[in-house]
Length: 192
Image (tube, rainbow, N blue to C red; front, side):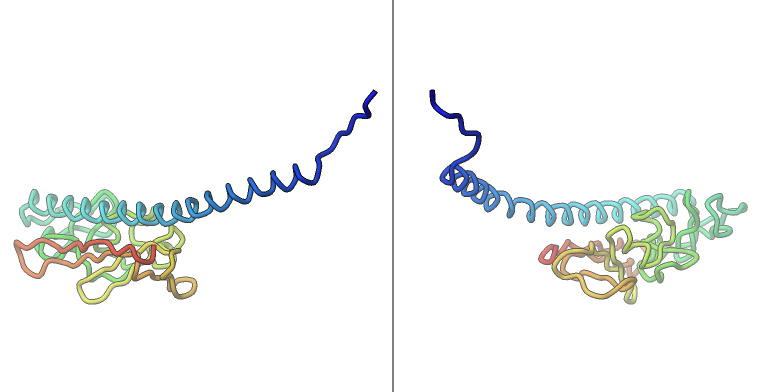
């Protein structure tokens, strides 16, 4: 009778470890690429939300014809002027406008937000930079332009409350005149 052995030989273990190593070398780059793809998808979703918000606020402005509201906005913030460069009532509150579209020149966390609040990227209507960062977004306001970014990629810099990613971003610029549309830039994905 042959004695039974209940173990693996050294050769069997080496073969299994080699196969696992090969599989890991093939699969690891795919997982890294998935994270980048997810950040790009998040950036594209944010750009879509910004475009939709701009169109909805502009449609609301056109429908109201510049006639001021007589009652306070149910979402808060007071009474909307519905003027070309005034405020417009949305379901969440008043939005600051520039030439009939959400303004790109409003500071983050302002009482009456512009495009950042209208886009609804986070659950807070007028988010601060820290609140955006908690959801994986960054934003910077310079002049009439708000630059939106997805943080966490290769170009992320700064500490808590100061995160930006200029290489995984797009910009929204308020229209320069009545009758003009806002400029929503193409996305930059080099650092996503």
